[in-house]
Image (cartoon, rainbow, N blue to C red; front, side, top):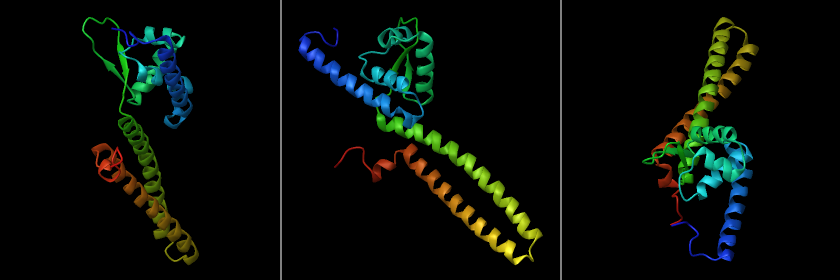
Length: 186
């Protein structure tokens, strides 16, 4: 049975217009996830697809090359917004959208935030070490020590922030965040 079997042309047209509007909005906002509008449209199309799709089917639907579809799907796979699925008898890879937007948000931002934490904490710790060594070497220079002490205090504050952010990410990954901010209004 096809998804629109038994529906009138007017009903189908209304559904397709509503879907297109949502797909356009998704595409416009995908820069939040660091991807292009066309990749956002691809995700939106897969989100509304009634069944998993091959790259060829996606390319035909979106009127884009298989290479473009492959690149877009790879991005969406990396973001965990699309999954490869297995279907008995299928000779080509099939893909479907992750329907849980909470999970998509959590996966994406946990990956990005952890990457930022690692880079920034490394830079902060390295700089703090250099400043502490300078402070020890120039212990008698009060003016220098005042500047170094202020900078080290700022670095310690930043490190406390990244520790907090790391723990926040843990609440996202464990699902504990939903104890504080439920997925649905109660």
